[in-house]
Length: 533
Image 1 (cartoon, rainbow, N blue to C red):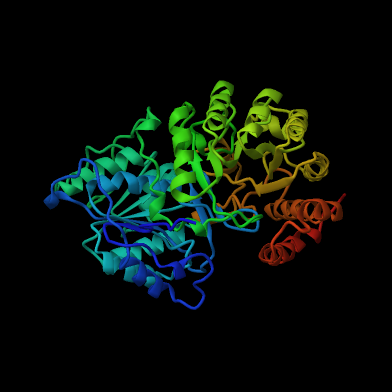
Image 2: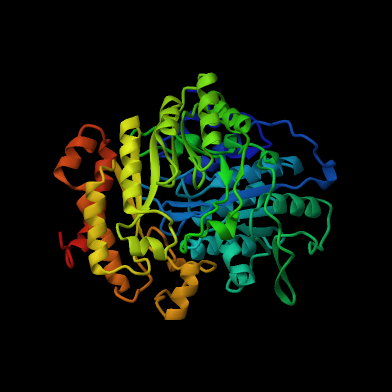
């Protein structure tokens, strides 16, 4: 397996020591690992670099939680890692780092996947001496994310600190109200805003009011600059610099193989009441060109030795011609890739699924949500339970596994609809299932409705966790009941004897069984009440 040269930093020499890979680090402290990595990084040519006096050193940070628990922060996906939600590579950070390389040396530290302490992170920043620290942030992790950002600013007052993510986009100037040590945050898509900010800071400009999409702390308080339009041509973006990541740390739970994300498009034309995609990426669908996507696949395989990929887009098959073209080009170039994607249950047919299978697709995520047509209609899903049955059947006939996604606690949910949804998911023939409690995010129709009705129980933004317990009552259910139904669904789906025998026995590594044991204990909370089969 090729070495991951230059992982973490651009601007040094050498390659990371083999002892720092995978699980061979148990006897080595995180601080020692960071020290060794700083001494062994490789230089990389840059294009259109500013003059030496104007160069910026930028530090990209995926923060660790104070509990050291792993976390996912990628676009709309903000949740704790679990048995089935493995740690994702920070795609957005790697893309932003690739942009920043034009302005000078960069460093990307994923303290999240490496379980680094705050002291470890501060020691690394002290050694790097950056001009700007860019921090990824999400709703459920925001208290920890901002604690890290604040500690950086307190330790290094001259360093500018910038946050980005859905949290800042949805809350605007309010997002920085409780975090006085943050200098800037990006509202909206971050790439062009970061590029312009780096250019201004490198040129010594203190006034950044003309940079669109920025939240700026001033003596008079936090103010927002003019909103930035959505990026029109996604192909203008560089490939994420995966050479800055420890790619062997991001592995699939079922086979232990490294995987990565490739974004094929942004935006979704649908208007589901609970979804935050519209606020972040908009409803206008924008695609990378087929050539761009397939060249990135080729780079992942041949440069980084990664052949397991998640195509990261809301509805991969929304444009059938595009999906077919991507598949045909993968086949034409004979790329040995295994991949998964997500789509709507109304956006698949036998032709596109057959093409996906030929091109290496083995798993398709489907947004099923509920067995209740009334709940689906209230959420503006524009689909029926029978649509999901048909989609799962088509996938089975094509030889593609399915992951069904469900949401408990949407408006209209009752005990009867929740129980019906559990029975329905058990009979769909899904290979895997993931379910969530509805979250009333600000900026969504669900958030507005929940505030008007007084349903929201959360007291802090960090409780807005799509992968956590319910924070919202409905007209018919208390939040605690919604949480119990979610736990019941997991338990009854994954611990069926026939399911264990067919899908897991002999296929799941020991470490995954140990995680499943903890998962089972968590689910036991859902067996206490309301378990009506």
